[in-house]
Image (tube, rainbow, N blue to C red; front, side, top):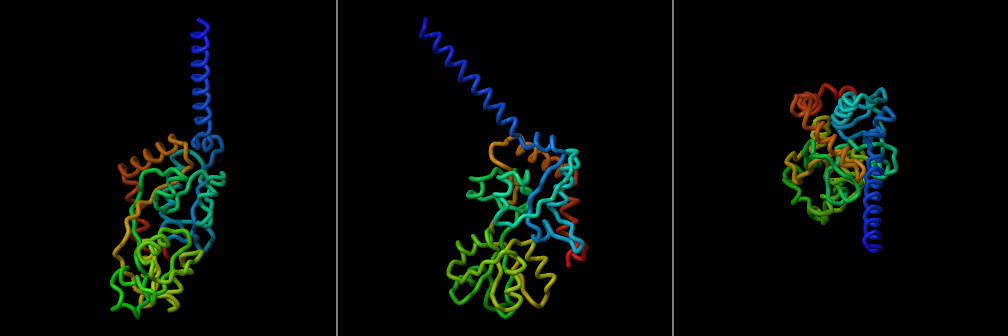
Length: 269
């Protein structure tokens, strides 16, 4: 009898602990925190065209910015932008400086070990901004895989990873910003810049004749919004939000504004 009582008490204790842990996780829900504070703090790194950019007047515009504004409007809370250097963007969220990363972040296995991702909201790939003098010499990333070429990339990006994995024989120079890395090519100090297709397309359009764009992506990169791990409610919310705006036409309207129109360029040039 005593053994049965002890077993029952132990089971009750475990059950209570389970409820306590569940409540603790529930209390940690970012959605509850956002609702309580009345704002959603969004981390991004301005300069990734056309996802997030700083305007001449000091504001922020872009594809991710508009999606975040629509999301917070539907949530009934304030949108608070948190412009953050790329190499510190995940630590910034993990330490509570923002609630979510909406920054055109590629979903990778390594990143997914630290953060949780919602379903991909757009797919891109790495392309090449090339020095014009190499027009007849370089046709794909394979041709750059030679020690005689200097390739640039932005520090901490999948562009850097792509070079190290697929163009590893070339000399790699890394820069804090994509604009610095691309400028090296335009100034003739490097042979190629490796970065995401959308930004490279805009940059080459802005600098016709000064650089060439090999616009066939050589990697597959789904982009996703990142949140802290252990928060399935927030991930569920984001997936349902994405499903809704893709179904009601809001997503297409915002996508076309930034990817199929260039009138916004005058605000950032």
